[in-house]
Length: 302
Length: 191
Image 1 (cartoon, rainbow over the protein chains, first blue to last red):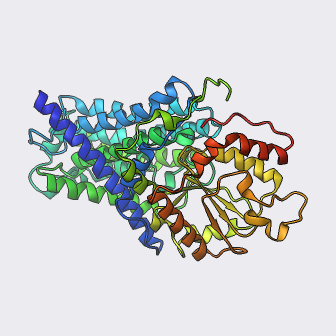
Image 2 (cartoon, rainbow over the protein chains, first blue to last red):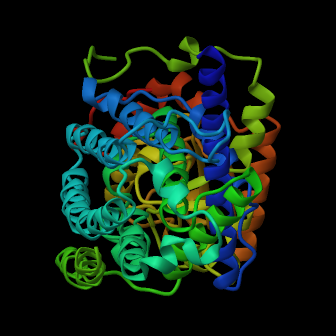
């Protein structure tokens, strides 16, 4: 058990580092798409270190202090419940029976903590952003849950490990190809989860400058930053496990998560932004209807 | 300073540990400057090209942030009216240490073309600790980038300590500020 905890800790450190690196790569790619040089790919590490060592004198109460922790451990908890490499004693993390349901609960956890903390910060922009974030979450959760239910019913299991095992045996066994509509719905809802551009109402740099963490600075912000990074990696790994057949070794895990990471990045760089009601309406119509096709199909075929 | 339950009543410089990572801290601070997006004077028009594709300040690790809480640098871009000065002081005091001030153009140095204006201040140095001056009317983005390069060198060598000066000489700065700003209704400085 102690060994397992140690390896889970190493995985977590690796997850945070990988998330920060992906953030740096995304800044570099964005810069190149805008025809400029951009920062180094290690810029996010420098930013996090600087923030971590900045001094802060702001306080708005207990929840204000707790929210970055919620964010960090919501992300870390989600990451630790998802097996990164299947069949590996070190990298399968703390995945147990029925864990897909727990993961879906845990994914909301960080956002809720964030919402409580940001609401207590008292900045007028924060509640606006929190309202937007939670409304949009209600939007993208629906198609995502539909596609997850499709996979659960199809594979007759609720464990991520079981879903990964059902996809072994060749690229055409991946759920991306066996359940293309569910996969499409989930990948569209990934755009909302990653808050990439058409659904960027939460951070909305032009109107509510940085969204919920407006009042956070220094060390608090560095925790949020690393929490967001590891949460992003957790989502990539989850999508890899659900739709791209999981990974049997670390190299495949890196390759597949990197491919998933590119999808919201390329969408982000070429789209303008939806308003809140437009984005929720979008999630409740197109990806939901597309996901329903597979849900109905799976019940008819079965 | 008054006892305010929401703020520290002591300078956090004395509370935190020091020494071990100091060199690395300075290195990281120099390479990750977040600039608060608050244009004060006409020079704000030169900040946009500095940060967008043509001159691309992001390659130096700089970026614009929308809130003073997360910012390291405030740019005083040109002339400062008395009305703006009050806001600038408020924004500066909301920023968290260590923080730096970059003043653009001739106006913050000696008043520039507004030297005899009834509502523009002549010397910014009396009210806020300035780390780097960039002269010109207005300085072009190349000059601004050169100024930021200088600021990075100063931070890297640990010499950009305007924020410490502000804490140490707070009474003197306050006295000067209150001479200019008559309706002084501001919260206490929270380090």
